[in-house]
Image 1: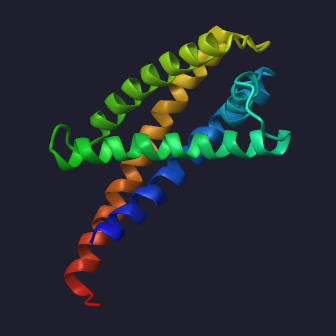
Image 2 (image 1 turned 60 degrees about the vertical axis):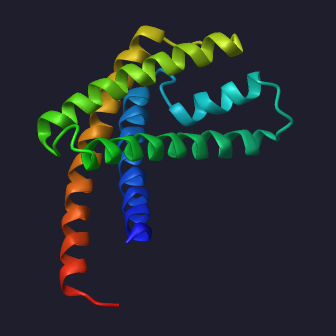
Length: 160
């Protein structure tokens, strides 16, 4: 059963991170600003003076973005399994707000430790990042609920 939960969390995190990323890319295009988290993560890696090729930095920017998304979904899973919050629209919104605040604090920290000051509108970036995390949490909650239902039904009616 553990493997099914890992697969569930992977699928949910990929979908939620992709939805969030799509939103960030749309806002980036709409406001003509650099609000693309994977690109900014690649810049952070560059500032850390890691011995990586440009393509590796871009790849790691994307991988880190999806790994962080998985860690957020894993956190949500623990919150739901431990019954700290129910799986509901209100908890999705609350988790999105909390995730947004964590995301903003994390980016402020990353920019400070790397002394990276990309030519972006920081206020605009942090506002869109906040809403991107709300989208992330809503998508994660909906898909988690759907996949949990599928897991329960599969476990009840399918024997392997």
